[in-house]
Length: 455
Image 1 (cartoon, rainbow, N blue to C red):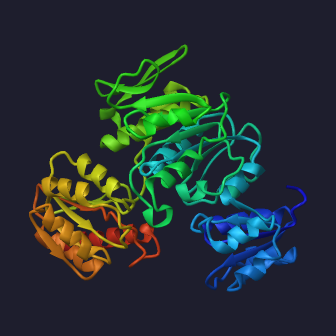
Image 2: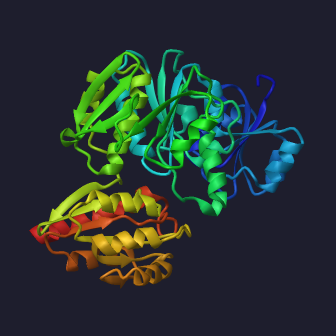
């Protein structure tokens, strides 16, 4: 790798900028490429220029022809014809997380799955902080992994959230602990089939040996079978079965049993997060923390202190006795199902829709018809969602034109003991830059209504 001097970083988002900055620090000539014009931060622009690089836009093949290596941001698919042509010509094409892995001398926990990645990774990051070493959190969680691992030593531990997009372009990536939380249909517009989607997810542990650990969800019928693909030491977790070895729930408490360790960590009633999906996230986090050397006592305290992550069933406010929850992070149908199941009492007013991922809607709408009093639909997906909701006999459906109208309609209709839940089952790109912007806007609208009500 030391012979590589000219690198193209494809995609000027968070990951791409982070990778470009770290490569420039190493003295590489870096061309940061994007399909559309971008304004770089002055420090990054200067760092790239100092080594003869800079920002490039519009002429992809011309930039590729100068590069010895291409580093891909997650949004860039590996199967672009121009990239395949470059690979055939001997140019190495890798994911940004692969670059981070190669530059990092320490220990890593990599967490993937369709849902729950951010919550689990954040929770593992909190557990790692109890260790007497440097720690960090990065990856798909919103921080470039290349940047987060910079300057860490061989004793460090990093919790990395990794997506199927990021796993497309790995070569040697081999975390000490790899966890797969679940697998349900998502990102079909990119991966085309569930087989390909699953293959990308399995790349998180594909290079492991018996010296590393593969953590798998025993309750997920597909993921449970993936032990056959791993050469790592297998550890399962389950909320429904008491495992002879692994991490499991019994009578509402979380337990770990492994070799000479047997410990009860805490009871679910002690947590500040709720729902079956979060119980699975906690089980996975316990497994990851344990293999990083976190004590049961420190895991317990980290769990009791954890308030959840922004945009994932995040409590916003209560207005006229009706609580409002922001679940903007629910960008697929399975995530919405988990959110609906978390509210055992039902009586939900659900706000859904956005940029349609074209995943099957029937399982979600069946549950919506059981749990929701009213479904408010918006965004590009609203017509297809409306047809599926009618077919599932959802009791009340309202289609609106704007996000503000959706929130104001929910406010006008909601009465205790109902709950208002934003859980879109869609990405946000038809209306917003990302799901975070969508969630923050929802919270602003709710808090504005709260102020009006109190005034």
